[in-house]
Length: 404
DNA sequence: AAGGCGGGGAA
DNA sequence: TTCCCAGCCTT
Image (cartoon, rainbow, N blue to C red):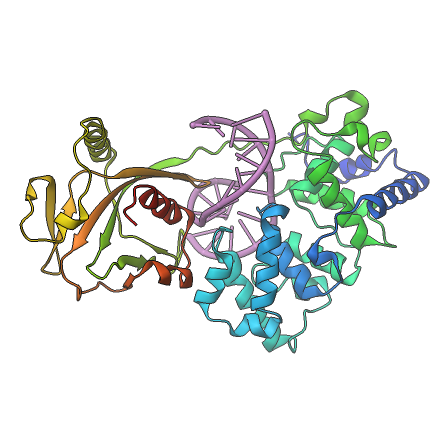
């Protein structure tokens, strides 16, 4: 029993029926003319420098153009050449990427830069096969660099391409499945311009971004309207077909914000693998959902009770009443802890949701012994470390409460 | 093939 | 709020 969308020769043959040579030529001409007229002027489109195009394509994975632009300028300033990238300290890389997410992208990019220095004399290789050997460069990015920088007629299959082409040719292949990529690769190769593959691929990106959008596509102003199978039938929003529904798992944390007498805060570096690898946060302790719920209730009752909030001046002295505080031992040094959380921060990742109750403590010793990978940082020093979004949200919460 | 990996903008 | 978006790596 063959499934409907199996990639058979007969199906591939069928996909190209109706698009004879003259129609393909007209399609390319209309599309490239539209791109010439409407193309976005972006910093990485000023020339065909493979390094700039590479950096932009990595940044643009899972990230919107408007977000990327300021990061791109700063990145090119900090690391003007592939050599600079290959030799950069990791802290600097992470700081350049802070807030962009998917931090392994920048680590992989540095590995690739080192590969280029070692294997390709410091120059981006010019064949799709060689480009594909670089760390962090998969089929999409290899195709994008090959076509945009080197004018090679290679498809660059990303979400935009799959959305545009699934509507154009009414392809109901599930775009979540890796196998579907072959279908789109086949169809794009049929119609890609060999005269100007660079503009052709970028035209798809611009069309997918501004016109052929996921919801409510702007078909009235689409240059491909007369070619679009889904438009003829009014079924645009049935495409692309996507099966996966991801639900995020909740995770519960207690953030321990500890200030010392010098006004510095304790932060720790995360493990060098996994989520937010090597980034810095306040100490986070994972707790059970039940404990989280209890503490959260306490916090809300405390809020409602109108009791005096944290008094830093009292905390600094020996004589304050400990009944509202927890005293914990860290490396035999007393840390005084406010029993009630001062607030809550949540952050949604693609696969999990963090719930963070923020507590505030005072270390009574300036020479507090640190665990491995921990440092005392004054707020002015925060600029030199890379922090993930949830950490920034905690800082904003504390600033709002005038604790920071 | 399936799951891990951030964060922003639209609905 | 919730929903949608989505390449590459590791397992």
